[in-house]
Length: 577
Image 1 (cartoon, one colour):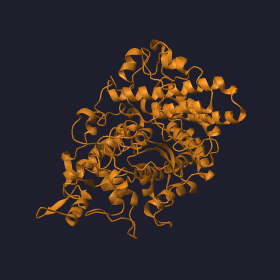
Image 2: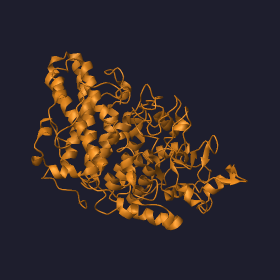
Image 3: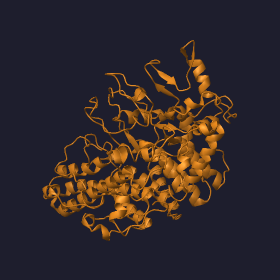
Image 4: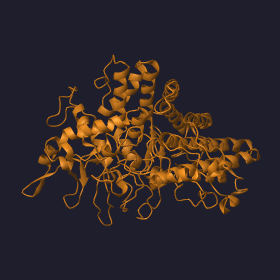
């Protein structure tokens, strides 16, 4: 999203849902003030920014939709071995009245209301603009429809049967008359929005309409999102497998356009997002939490890196602390290391050149920052000799699966290592940051393309192999075929290879749980992970989510209880009471 959106004063255009249900609204003073406001393209853009601004809330990508709702997989879990306080939701131990569930539902419908409101108002005055301004207004309308499509995509894949609110008038309906829509119909609505946006938005690098398109939606971003929508539509629970062809063709069109690509170095992605650097080469949809006064401890707006990054102690006047509340499931660490034969007792890898997947140690932090122990990174499995930190012994303990297991359960994601990557100044806040969040990267589209081709053609094509191997070559830093997938795979073997590659490439970026759900294997994966953890270190390996996860229930979140109480025609999702 455009820098500056977060801190702009939008009193004339912001809308807060205050109605009797969170997708319902009451006309208030703000609505009256907006009458006659959209008379210039500048005013239209300001109102559009109000839709973008929705994405930065805690209940959206500032916290919930980014990483908080995504924990409880074979890769990530909450800190600790209890379900106390904030740990309840990542452990799947929460009720239908959980406040975070209610808030996410509410903010997604706030975003939808804002998009509906903007589109209705700008359509009413469209003919008053000159021909040049109409072109710009059409771009703004495409952005609004793309955002609305994104919000509905988040709703339908997380909540399943949801109300489809297509006009602001519907937001004022009696909640007793509200009904849920068939998810397939919701997907059709999303498809229509994204197709319109795809046809009317410029490529990010060929935008002659907007003065600054940083962090704003473009043709490539929407094309990639639509490919992902089709792939999700083809999976559980709708299972419309005809959409695999559309997923492959849409992703393929984006790839063949040549307008986007992978960055040469994986680590540059991490440095970019930690410093608010906009590079549309690989970043397709990215939420910006930029602020011009980020050094002010009360100013930062997102929790990226503070809750889900490397645990860090505070140093007064230099840095704030990072909680490290998201932990890496250790069987995931062991599996990834075993891929390259790294670590004491690990099986021999298949790679004779000694190269390892660079993504692993850039994604998983086996260290933290503690100024009481030293200036640099400190291994969680640290050992001391004569009460002095011994880095050689510490690294050996880290790689030895038989040593210091308790400490190894403290590993965290490393992609948002604020201490390592942030270059523009100190982040003094202990709870929030200005680190950005990737919603969609080009690498994700390459993997969707490979997956969709395999499912559509009932086996991998040369193009499917090429898409995955392009990612693997960057991961290993090679230009040759030495680390490519083996050839001759059948449909199931290639399916599993792509799923594994998604786990590695997109680790901790909010995709894993939703992937497992659309593949129909969420419950089975959680149970297998408990078995893997027990084999590693027995019952002492904290994996609380397995105690509460139920098949047929936790694939979807519950419809918030407040909605169930008010909207008497609603039916609750299976397993929830």
